[in-house]
Image (cartoon, rainbow, N blue to C red; front, side):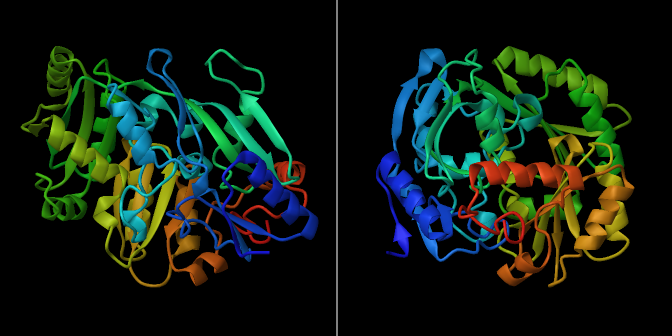
Length: 406
């Protein structure tokens, strides 16, 4: 049999998986392989290339529904939606530049497999919250369907949510239906300069809890702001960013509400207009400040107010650089050198209230030797193992991607 299979239909994909299950041949599931360097290296000698199942099958702008095949480039989907002033509201991040690849190579299947969401996750939810239906092939070589094309169709609705974020270890998606949303008429970013990390966390929490309807909040300490300034973004010193979207008069009004809430005590406030604002938020979403370096990179998920305390602990132990998204709940951490400091990173998170850490950029040998994803507590690990057994009893789908041997 060939080393790479490239099916053109769901039935062909089923046949490949059925053969692999019968022969106990592990398969690496890829689209454009733009996220191959994420997670643990897959322990498989055969590749199931899903890029041949590509294209938008159904788009009903009036119903806010889109159905596409898994190999469809996200860039193609976003262009089709933008032409009708709509968008994927979960704003999927693009890992390409961070992983040393060109931007814009990700596919819909990869985005859903990794449950990728950008800076607007706090307002609009994760990718899994936008999946209405899914056709897929289980590790048994069986085609199944779950969900539908309308939001109120709850029959089997939770199954696509379960598969989203499973990194291709449970099933191979062959068709995906998503809900889409209208794109905001305009946007602006409220930029507050000069805040320390803890002060910025307090400001972001206040803004997110206000009536200003902030759609995203991030804080860039001085080193990160300086890096992005060198890349063409108009920043100076530490920058706390609050994104406002909607109709022009509404954005103007809410900007002034934020000024009244946060702009006292001589704080420097600036407004970033629509084009520059969108470019700046793409840079935040895709961790542009860490692209092009050899640093190891972590994503830490913690309580929004705990981020500065976690970073303060780590800075006291070793050299590192961090910035904050999701109102402080997502910490991007760059660690120079060859030691990922995994024990220290996870200990700091545990000491500050809990959360999880994912190593998103590191050489393959390092990703093979330490837990890339946050180790699960015993009961949850047992539940995950039972789920894997039900969907992929022979362990042929992306084995080793999330945990050793599974």
